[in-house]
Image (cartoon, rainbow, N blue to C red):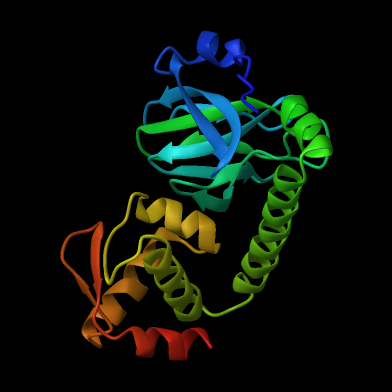
Length: 226
């Protein structure tokens, strides 16, 4: 079943750095042939905003996306980062509870939520993948909540382990800034930088550049995170 998504044109009007390629459809859930229109977002361009109608579902094809909320005191709390292959923007309600932005220049597949739900109602494969995704998102939210009660060292160690697992390597080129990391971990940027320096001094990591890190002693980081 091939289903072509309609386009969220309001984002095209708000963000001229976003481009639509109708001839480059991509499958939403791996082998499931539910195709979405391909959109390109420049660095820091908003993909959707908090309280906007959740009419579309998104899949990262390339680049990195952050999903976040602005708290009442003006602070930003990043809820998660999404990498190639990740699906995001599926909401329980009719509106987005958070906002999403491209951390780096990103290509995103977009499909109508109504199309996805209608297909899931008829296709067991799509339905199973949708439920698996929802369960994974709930587990990610639970793990993030638990992370925020740990010490600064434990939070940063956990983040480095998770990011190296997602990016598949001991040498990690971080797509996000240290401010992004701080806003995800509920820390100040100074605390993140200080903790990374401490890890380098103990040879747990090597800071090749401000963004490139090499995990020299993964077990030491795991011991902190356990």
